[in-house]
Length: 481
Image (spheres, helix red, strand yellow):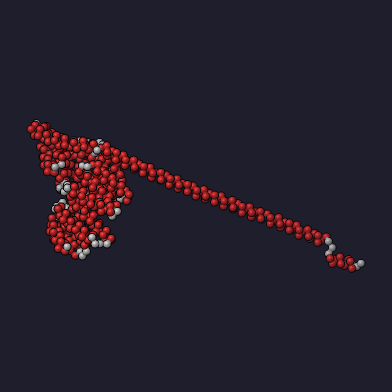
C-alpha cells in the first residue's frame, strides 16, 4: 500500500503542471498533506479532494479516474475490518469518489458509465439514510437522462429529488430541482408551465440570498417572456440578470445576458443597440473560450449585417460560426448557420452555393424536426405529470390555508374569550365595590340610629331620675314617721 501511495503522490505532483496556477497551489497544498498523512481515512479524503481539483479543470480530465480509483481501493481495503463510526466515514468518502467518477464520465459524454457510478453512489446513500445525498444523486441521474434526451426519466428523477428536498427543507436544492424541471418544460415549448417553475425557483433564491441563483432564474424567466413575445418583460428580467452577473464577476452569465438583450433589441429593430450587445457578448465568449456561445453570437452578428445588405461582413461572421459549429457538432447550430448561408448566397445570386447550403439546411432541419416530433409524443405525459404535481401542490396550499384560517379563528376565540373574561372581572369588581360602598353607607346609618337611640335612652333616664325622689329622701321620710 505504501508504494501505491508514493506512486500516486508522484503522478499527482507531475500533473499539477497541467492546471492553472491557483489550482496548482491548491493541489501542492493537498500533496503536502497527503505526504504527511498517517491514516488511511485522511489519505482517501485527500485523494478525493485532489480529484475534485482536476475535475474542475478544463485540462487533463483523465487524471480524475486513477486518483478516485486509488481512493476507492483504500476505502474498500479498510471497510472489511473497521468499526461503525469509522465505517460511516469511509462510506462517505466512497460516495464522494463515486460521484467524482460519475461527473468525469458525464463530462466525457459517456453517459452509461456516468449512470453506473451515480447509481452506485445512490445505493450507498440510501443504505446510510442520507436524504440530502440521495436527493443530490437523484438529481445527477436526472441530468444524465436529460442529456440523453430521455425526458420522461429525467422528469421522474428530478421530481423524486424535489420531493426529498422539500421534505428536508433544502431550499437551494429545491430551487435547483425546480429550475431543472422548468428547463424540461421550456425545451418542450410548454412556456406557461416553465414559467411557473422558474418563478418558484426565483422566489426561493431570493429568500436564501443566492445572487448567482437569482441571476440564473431572472435570465430563465426573461427567456420565457421572450418566447411568449412579451419583450418589455423579457428585457426587464435580462437587465436585472445582467447587473447581478456583472456584480458577481460571472463572465459566462454576463455574456449570455448581453446576447439575450441584443436579441430583444434585434426583435425591436434597434440595430445599433442589438449589434453593440451581440459584439460585447462575443468578446467575452471568445475570451473565456465558450465556443458554443461564440458560434451563436457570430450567427447573430452576421444576421444583423445581412439585414443591412452588408453581405461581405455577414459572410465573414457566418463562415466563422460555420467552422465552429461543425467542430462542435451541435445540429441546431449547424442548421441555423446553413440556413443563413443559403439565404445570403441566394440574395447575392450565387445559386450553386445557395443550393449546397440549402440541402444541408433541409437535412439538419428534418433531423431536428424528427426530434421535435419525438418531444411532442411525450408532451401529454409531461402535461399529466405537471397537472398531477400542481394538484398535489394545490391540495397542500388549500390545507395550509385551512390550517391558517383555523389557527386565526382559534386565536380570535382566545382573544375574545380573554377580553370577555376581563370584562366579567371588571363588572364583578364594580359590583363588589358598589356592594362595599352600600355596606359601608348602611353601617354608618345603623351606627347613627344606634347613637340616636342611646341618646334617647340616656335622656329619658335623666328625666326619670329628675322626677323620682331619691333613695336618701325616701329613707328620711320613712324614718320621720
